[in-house]
Length: 356
Image (cartoon, rainbow, N blue to C red):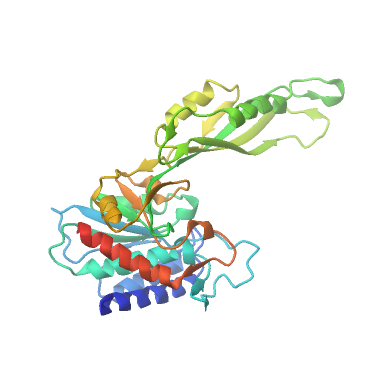
């Protein structure tokens, strides 16, 4: 390992400690955005902040060249009640750096930032490189990467930093939440009057439970649906409900469009079906893309990811890859191994060296 990379690895860990110590819940990332601006600015690098998003271009940016975006997020979820450690205390024990957001996705973010620093002032690159630290990823908010992209030059492809154990997530399921409403007729329960909307809803819910989509993806498997919420507006026990509402969480593979899925559902149920949003569509990057080929050359494996990230909001090929383990995300006493960050930086640099 050369001295430059060693220094960058240490800087990444120290930056992550500072980020952990600073609360940055989604839509409340003002302070961490400031930390990132100061860190990048201290390197003498011109940078831009839009909302709580921070980005910078490599020194010899050339509009004639294609551009790679390095992106991860600096917002976190709120700590769950099972924490026994202070979620905002960046403690290192047995090679693990504990703290809220350490694994998801602080380790990825700081690794990508120092990777950008490594390439920042190199001349004669085949690609431009942009770093973007963005907000609101944990809530799929509109004030994060989606808000930032119009401020950026044309992007040809991206590396999205999420904890994947530095393996390559080449595809992601799409997420579509459906608000469903079953209509009945109110009546007095004692006289068995009315038309019970709950019973109508149950028939549709049974269909959601038992239906299987025909097209199965090699990367993502079958599309899936789960009913997750059910409610009526009734507060009285003796009134037959006229309306029953329920929510369906759908996770769609790349073989179906959201519109196809909605059409299939509407052809089989009686309830109203209203998608909340169709923003978070399934995505994939070709296995012969230069980023993927570079990863394969480094012995990385590829897979389809069941989780959704900012990759879903990018209208260009994106590879999800980063240090840490997705299984630790949003858990109590979250942590990332220091050597995962160190190895992640080395692998990011090696991967980009094959491309740029």
